[in-house]
Length: 84
Picture 1: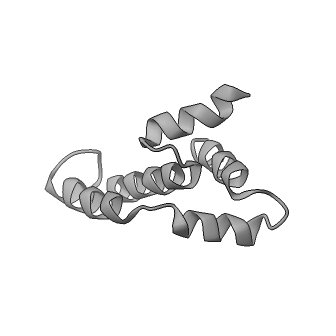
Picture 2: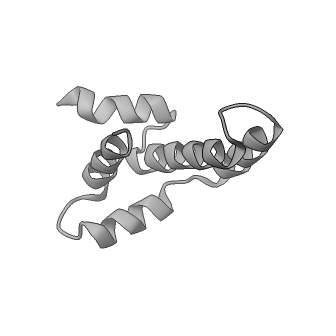
């Protein structure tokens, strides 16, 4: 159970599961737009996105999608499902 919660936060470089989810989505978006995980476009998009990834947007989204679940649980679940 601990691995389920700890891995996303370690991978996202945050102690906030929703911020880790946002950071992961920003990185994936930058990679999609740039066509890979390196280069000027990726670095620029990822850098800007990471600087504003506070977890507030992810918290609001999961609160709307899963109103009966605590945001950290929903963010962790969404993090894992986004990896599939």
